[in-house]
Length: 170
Image (cartoon, rainbow, N blue to C red; front, side, top):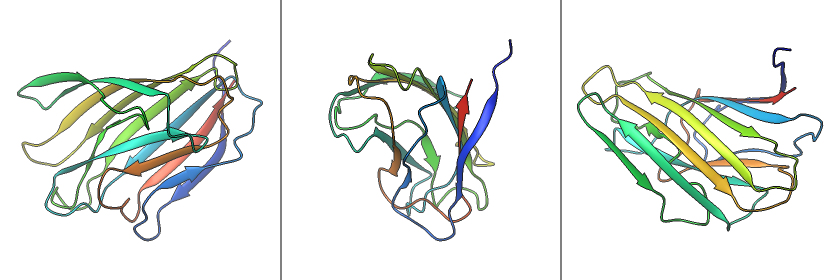
């Protein structure tokens, strides 16, 4: 049987804001999928990293990432435990106007009593030599069901016209 997606909530940023949160997430699905088209207002930078947290918790996170920009590749482990760090280098204010980063965050078994894994796949576009592709694997070492998701830029704000759509998966 094919997976089915059900839209739980969506948001379009009307004016720059410091974070986006989905709360009161229904518990009747097997997995969650968050689809994002975003830009940051971070001045003087081509990219801005987003962080990810669940249920307002500020502990128990870990992550690894790999990224490439067309001429080189790198990988690393997040040193932070207060959030899943740098899930994607989101297009910043000095990137080409009206370009947005696109990413997909997948969270399997979000209601189980096991620790919660996260996979992130994303790309940025700059119509220049600064494009970026990144994949992140994260873990929230907590047995609570996920009831809220918060995304926050590392610096700057989420720019106007950024979109976020949360789906439940069956």
